[in-house]
Figure (tube, protein in one colour):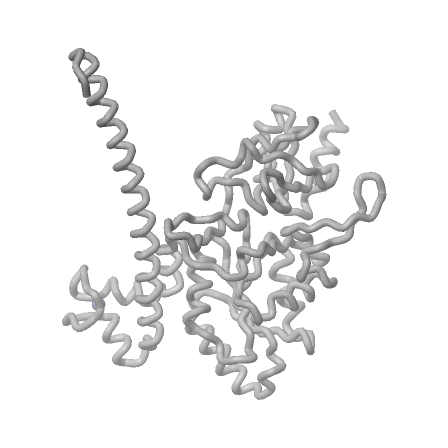
Length: 367
Ligand code: ZN
């Protein structure tokens, strides 16, 4: 009895990977089936690498690769994996707390799951050029939609030596990111890195941003080593040998976990209407005060949105960015609906052809 008590109060080997009491509770039925918990480090061609209490294992993902691309197992998932077997199979994964989804570039709009169970979405923006606020708003929409808490990190702050100019830039970005912390960092001077490390030290983070935004430099500053270019990490395997593996989920020395998957580098929206609404929450608040419920905020009388633009409270740029992202989102949704409609139609045709065949068979005639 005492030994089981001390076992349950001992720190779980997976705690560093984000395991907590809530995950343990969710996992209980699988533990009852003799399955082991593991966090997915990477997924690759029908297999995945998982961190378990006894180290990294490779398992087959056949049971967790359904037709729906949003339900395919991905990096960051907490999985239930067989304790023995060759191959071992992942039997299930726990319900996701958050999920990053992007639209694929194919004609058919299908979402693709990029990362699961992310707490912090760190949006890196380089101060080498004037920040593109529209792009920041797009990343914010994606972050909010995922369920993660966004954070904007302005990198290369040393390139803006004038403190007034820097404060002005930060203020500009803050206006584009209501409810979001905006941090300046410089890997040259080390400024801000400790603040960032403290934030991401709790939970799982992803780095978002375009190329040149300084994501690799940020990641290396957090990881304390040069691993982000290749994702390669040296570790000791179960037999005490040093091996080099590639993974998309890394434990940070200061605590916390960082997910870096190639797909996260340039992301498009995928049905992120709620996320867009959250980025532009103040516009939606104004809109609620418009005289007409179906106000398009163009030239309608009593439009609270246009009033806010007129008195300078709401930048015109922001209203345009809001419209642009909503339009983009609607196009994606329309494409998805068209595909679904086509599938339903095909299904109906098959059924009706079947029906006709059955009908004529009963009548003993020909279709
Ligand atoms: Zn209006």
